[in-house]
Length: 236
Image (cartoon, rainbow, N blue to C red; front, side):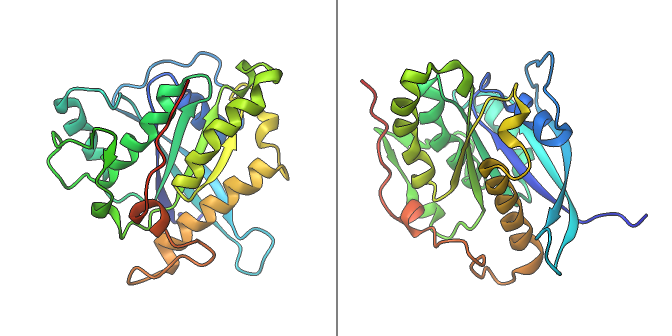
């Protein structure tokens, strides 16, 4: 059997947000029974049919790199993490819907990866301001995923999801909110499954079908995120 082409997708977010459970669900279509802390990086593979149901359909491997650690880690830890940031084709940013700080830190995570060529000890955030100019030309597809939806009471869900919706808007990315202990959130044909498939298709297009930094077909210009103004996260 011929080997399949593959792409590399980073899965980033604070410790404890459920990245390992998410990756296991995405790759094995099963709930991870006993998740543990990720030390360094864990890699799993998902089989994805690019442009499924069309004449251009082709199967690829999606490597999901679950990176452990915290954005508040010592500079030595951050420096060690940068080895995982090479040759990245896509990024999934994961936050815990019940943890406001994990949502705020998605900005730091994205900047840490996209700023990987700079000195690891460099300040990424100062007084709430982000140096967006360094990333004006970024074209790496992003996806925002909120976890632990099941832990939010139904009477509070609208409030929480409204508060976090602008994350995807700021990153010019699609948003998926789910419970990693319930596979039905990614059931075939569901809106979440469609968003996920669309994201992986964009990652593959960037890696294999585009040259010279051309715009990804159907992928909006990122000037709003990288060249515009970040919305500050304010919580009462």
